[in-house]
Amino acid sequence: MPDILISYAREDEAAAARLRDALAGQGWDVWGDASNDDRAGDGSQPSAAIGDALNAVKCVIVLWSDAAIGSKAVRLGARVARLAGKLVPVRIDGAEIPSELREGRPANLSEWAGDIIHPEFRRLTRALEERARGRRGEQAVPARGPARWRARALAAVALLALGVALGYGIARLGGIPGGGATQALRQGLKEFFDGKYVEAEADLRSALRAGDGAAAYYLARMYRDGLGVHADPAKALAWAEQGAARGNALAQNMVGLLEDAGRGMPRDDKAALASYLAAADQGLAWGAFNAGYFYESGRGLAQPDASKAFEYYRRAADDGNAAAGNAIGDLYRTGRGVPQDRDRAAQWYRWAADRGSAAASLSLGYMYANGQGVRQDDGEAVELYKHAARQQLPGALNNLGYMYEYGRGVPMDLDRAASYYRRAVQRGDKPALSNLGRVLGKIKAAGAASNRR
Image 1 (cartoon, helix red, strand yellow):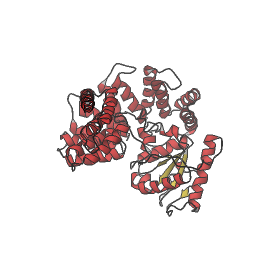
Image 2: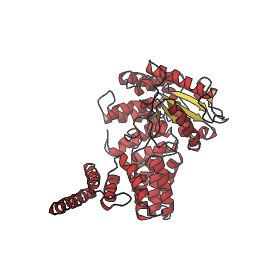
Image 3: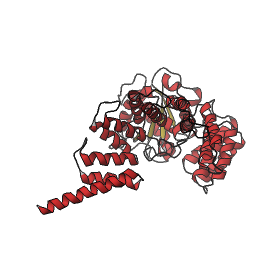
Image 4: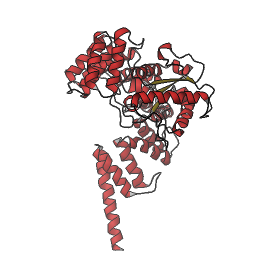
């Protein structure tokens, strides 16, 4: 289990990287990368590259700055981390931390330059040790040794993965619930994140009876995904509808997902779109993305509306949603809803790829391989394909096979080409099947020629 996730506004990436390096050097295992499936809906079933971030870490450091104060994703995620008992706030400029999100006297790293003996850095590590001790119930100081953190850190708002993309946000954009609902929700969330689903269900039901819609969302998650209970889409829908009726944006989005997929009820595209729009109107990035997807595809509408799709994708991208950035790149590349502009398409693909989108890495790699909107560069294409292939995207595996088959950006290697094609076939990529047959034929022919010598 990683020790720490660092949450920050994308404007504060340099400060986050400096802190990550210092903590890793002290032996803390820092969660360093996250990525989203591009059609994950509420993000609650992300790719293996993300995992369940809030479940996985022991502490969540939130870097507070003027930029972070203005980020809905950072504020929402901080509330969730606090409810889960994992919040460790840190100041990196003169911004005032919201009173409900303070924990003791936070470390002030506004003047910190990376010195590990700086008193404020030591204050932070003590807070981490205390928080970790509470989570572990054992030795608090992490073992020294090489840090095991992923090489490429998100340039996006890291708490998007907590508060919005992973679907763990409380999604009451106006604030957290009060009174008994707060205590019941806090306890239910702790149990939910620790996998104690029987206890979580009881406390979440109590929170819902006290009027908190977020509790209904987590109950819906349990019944949709079979977490401690038998999966039951109809019950999941019933819980989600209760949360939606109480104005919870994540519950509204989940109702849309269930209506979209026809789980727990007959498929209803018009109702799904209405649910997504309700979530989007509350500022939920995944709600805006899903609404954009429906407008682009014409689902629930008389006909597609790419201009409207762009509007909702842009709203989601403004909140850091990588899938929306990839979708905007697609619109610019094809000239749907916006004037065709491959340069801007490449910029959006890069933006989304930097935030973990495998699909954007694949699309940008294709543009580099073919010199569309960017200079032609097979080496860059290969690197982007590899990034997408690490997330097991079939198209990227197929394209990597092609690059190895023809020696583009890499030395020609028919065996590696066959390996990538085979993996793509296993994941359902149809073009890879014929490509595999072709390269196996080349390998057989090469072997026969060698035997004749």
